[in-house]
Image (tube, rainbow, N blue to C red; front, top):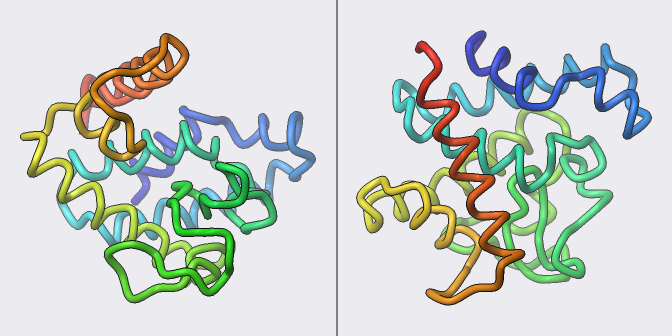
Length: 172
């Protein structure tokens, strides 16, 4: 868990949450510990899955409290939580591939963060299997991107691949 916490802090320093999102640095650090615990509990020893989860969370939410708490949603209100899982606009919408409802995968507490991490991990596990672990394929699948995409989308996908690859170069 400690390694995951260090990586989260490296990807988006807690001080950035205070500077850009008005969340006190100490509160951001405590929330980051919750995220790290949820990821560590979900992945067990699967380092590759941890790297994918960290990359997705970094690029989808920047670990921002407003997104993590559910106050802010993406895709015109369709995507929920830390991993921006596309569920639907209604809080009771079903999270694809899970028993959860959308409102259950938002919240900064450990239970909600574990549910969100479990939902994202389930989706990522399937993509890792189908894509044979190839990062671009996994991120395209996670984002629902077709074979052809704009330069803007390509830039976003390449940024995710770059982050993922930077995490693979880190010592365990």
